[in-house]
Image 1 (cartoon, rainbow, N blue to C red):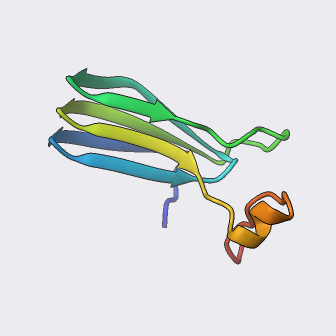
Image 2: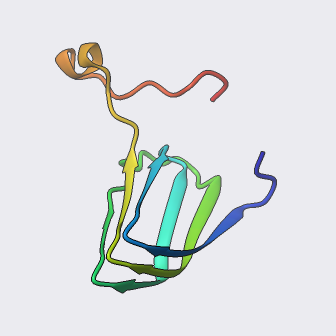
Length: 91
């Protein structure tokens, strides 16, 4: 359980992939992350006036790795009916 507004993730990886699955109220900041021969791809969920409940800060170094931040994927039925992904129970 996260009890603060900001979650800081200190990372020092080499040749690894970090994938963060977020929901619309979570913002990821990778400004303090040092990349050495690495890639970062941040795809935030579309903002529909949702207040920010959690800010995730990525800090440290990643070498020969990859960082991916993306929203949850839709199921096949949601994709077929062009519906947004459903949130987990309790949200």
